[in-house]
Length: 77
Image (tube, rainbow, N blue to C red; front, top):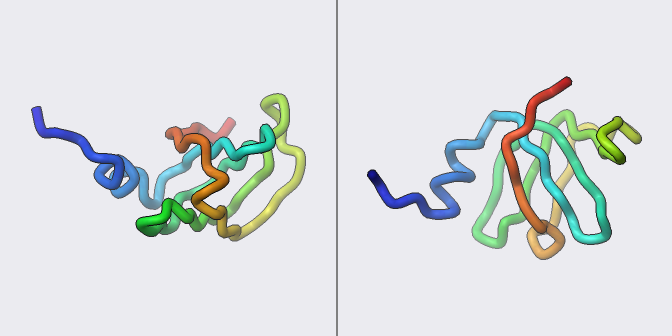
């Protein structure tokens, strides 16, 4: 089995739906468009999620890497 590095996992998630948890108990769901070495993320079709429901639509958004707690594959419901 090949060793997986964090950037390998992010590369595999490009152009896929992800759920991003940020500091301050904020969650953003959308399509991971790009990222950099600081884990700054560009999310397209972003939505702020609160208690599993859409709180507001964000569109294309840049999430600063030092606020990211985790990135996870997401499904759109």
